[in-house]
Length: 64
Image (cartoon, rainbow, N blue to C red; front, side, top):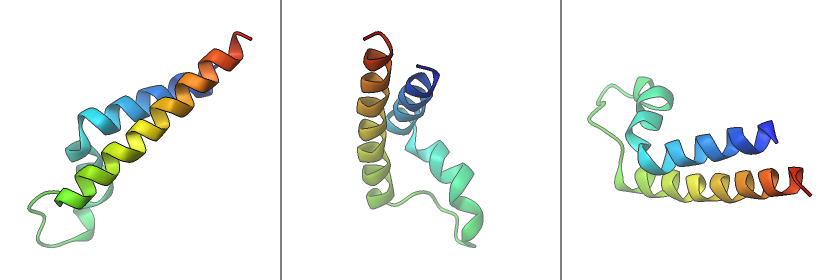
């Protein structure tokens, strides 16, 4: 259940704030740190949706 909550939290964070994901994980890798690309924002949101689904499945499975 705790893993499900973790996945749910990370997924919601990825959907709502892809810029913070870029800032923490990718900004230090480039000299021209202008901001995340459109592709990065979209892919982070898609991965966030996947994490939310996995988190919900984990939470529901813990109660069955």
